[in-house]
Length: 487
Ligand code: AMP
Ligand code: MG
Image (cartoon, rainbow, N blue to C red):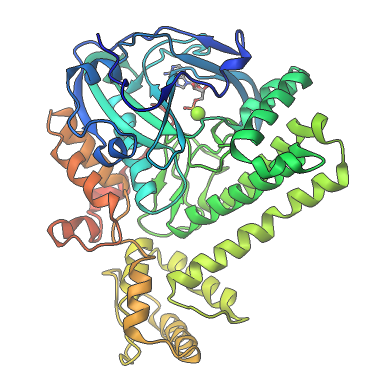
């Protein structure tokens, strides 16, 4: 078989490969039986200089038939706040890296291509259901302009995989400049292997945080950048009503990317304490907890880096920057969501009061902000925007009065504001029920819903009248869906 990656810069995996066994192993895949295409991401393929219409040799590769041995890495982590020991790429195989059209090296990884030395009790597989969710979830996030790993290909099979019921196996091909997690640092720290911890830090600094190399303590400077990126990422999530679901330190990217799409969810009705992961009985990863939990994860990373830093006050200072970084970005994003261009001292109060009303009345988060994007200063009624009932209309009238006054204060013009807000407040997010519709159809061999959703989610700020129902109030059955860790 010819190497389909030939043509264009393509290099074997360089990132962690220098570590060698037992930390990084070259492991054969177990290709899928009778593979078939479910999705091919044409725009990402273009970015990577790959063909728009992939042939059978690509199907072979993305179903796990490889010419050279891929790489799997060990990492560790805290899961639900508890040290979980050694984990690793239990079902992920890194093929190598490729330079994209912007000159950025992108790693390409198969998820679900069989056992690895890090599989523990797992079968190394990913089911169709969770692979579709990961594919659509990462592309929805990219469409919203939020940092994320990407999804290039999705291949299905008739290979049975046992979960709660019998399902079929699939492979999603993921793309990112790096899949290194906080847990990679915890892994070497826990082994007290300071030389390897330093090697890993130096490599990440050199490749991704070169400005930190000139600092007297590069690990501290890197930590500072990671803290900022992590705080910004979680603010971005809050602003689109996204819950990750499993914010364990092994799922926290060192680049501040959304990583490892499992039981995630974009909220329909706004509930500040929404728990999207059915397995998270304590609500550790509820929407309202996400900022605090990612801050906690940064503390875990700081602990892991401690042998390279050794300066307590400086570490504290870096970690204490998380809150203000989060809050500044959160306020900035919600200002934009509300169409405010200038800053006013009372903004946070008015944002909070609006969110509280959304929460108390369980209103649809996405539809509220999208509908508000057409708010007219001439309309003096309290418009019923979303299709939700308004059980406490007098509270809303008050908020709307203050909101209108706030717009008048900055002499906001309807037309310019509508434009800004419509580019900020998406009409479409990957609601759970939409992913479910794509999964149900694909299970029956119909990938049309998946393809249409992929198209819409790539430009979620446009109205797409042909798919207006996907921007409407979700159907009744949407509220009864539940998503768990099983994948
Ligand atoms: P996750 O909860 O998906 O982040 O996975 C936690 C750990 O379990 C990671 O090290 C995964 O690689 C591993 N894992 C999850 N599912 C499987 C599976 N089906 N087979 C092998 N390893 C898995
Ligand atoms: Mg994971």
